[in-house]
Image 1 (tube, rainbow, N blue to C red):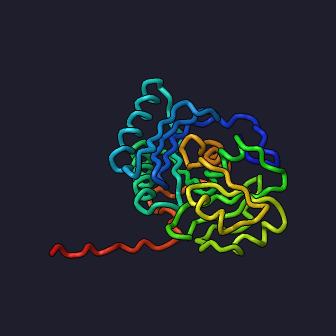
Image 2 (cartoon, rainbow, N blue to C red):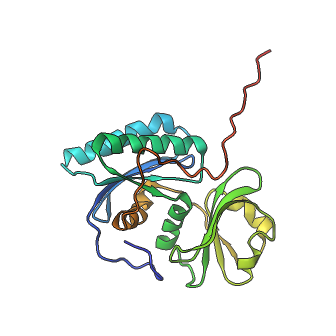
Image 3 (cartoon, rainbow, N blue to C red):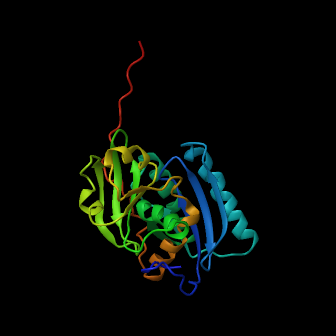
Length: 242
């Protein structure tokens, strides 16, 4: 399935892809074959990716190996998002690509958030989508897209005020979603601003984005690929015990 003006399904793309998503507190893994998700597993219990991801990937690989299904690629959510979560997911994806000689596909996390909205929500033809990831306090990682997932405004870290998105809100409806959206709505406070709750980045939604990239030969160099952190990670020095 590819994205177009009205998000209509096109012919199936023949490929089997392992999908890994660890950019937020949700940890998830999925397998798609020929444009259909045939396996998916999610853990919403908190940021415990280091403990859970390995076993979830093992289950996905066992499922495909038991059914003699060969993989073509591994897709991983590449950020922005949690620094630690992204590193865990990308490291796992690289290891599988090396071990099985597979192609690596990176899927932008904010584009991924748009997929369940386009599939499940009634959104006006001229509406814009603004996925948001929480970056603490009144800061979010956000981008603005149209319904064909064309970038209207690049991804950046926003300190949200009443004027941050006014340029677009004064023109047409804008839908805000993701784990950073709810805290911003009172501040945005515009009649064209709409909140969609319960939208999380999950591996099972990666399939159309990953397939489009694979079909267009947009794969990554496994040796040199790094996640898109957006902001530099600053390690905190632990205070000495008294």
